[in-house]
Image (cartoon, rainbow, N blue to C red):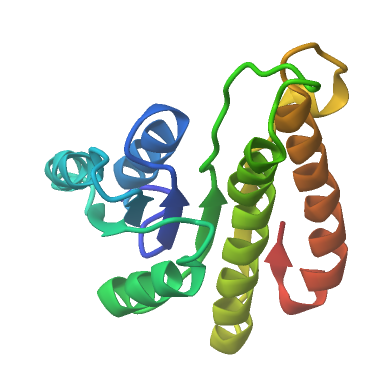
Length: 183
């Protein structure tokens, strides 16, 4: 039995990269993991692979096709429906591309903030509500970047969105600690 045996996690942006690695580690430790990513991603294949890997540890995985900018409540509901509860949220979904601040259309700035910051906010609120209703606390992990602290050319949109995620994390940590939710 792993350290996360009996725990249920939702990991956004989990079809590949850091999110996939986090989901795999959770399954190896015995958790039930909802792999959340965009429709058309490799999320279903990732979840199937994680189920096979979790056979020896009791870990499980399922996939929900979702966009963090609009489907936060649906992701949480799908996780609770599949596994009976939600103990851990990992806000990993993000986007990055090089773009000059003067040349980047405002819609591209908005897209970066919608995915990186607003997605984290919406998913945290939906998960926080479920955790408060369950009455047993929980954990929310917001994936940020050292770029939140750096002034860099070609990534103003990304860096400022990650900076907003860092501040949101500090605020939610203080606000939700009385509910036993560590952010």
